Image (cartoon, rainbow, N blue to C red; front, side, top):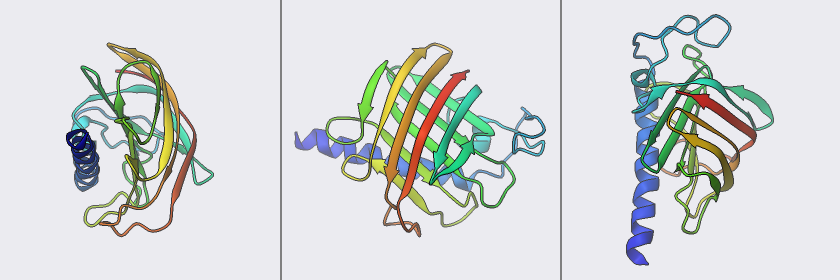
Length: 187
């Protein structure tokens, strides 16, 4: 049991480290240009842009963050074995852009933060290089749920909600609430 708790805690810390590295690499460019009106202003959307090992996805990735509509302008999906990561940013150019990511088991089902669950969610804003505020729901911090409805070779879909307190090692303050989350993505 102690080894299981250690591994879950390690996974949560590694996920935060990945999120912070994503923010640090946000200004990189690659080869796939996104369209007008999607928050990208013609900047490229790629796995290297977001610093996530995965594939650029098309489809819907939306939520309400603290009661304000959020829509991903650049979404990356990684589905390897039973591990799923969905990450997106609402703008590739705005200094106050928000990056949101979910890490979970990639098997159809409903997962709740805490206990034996590997469900993990993180939010960073502003989306800038340097010290980044991070909010997270994982293991013993925060709460939330993911209902994964489709998990196929090139398609994932689900709904989610999270309450995410600040990660103490970052300058984040207050608690962030994500509701009405939906993704339906092809990659």
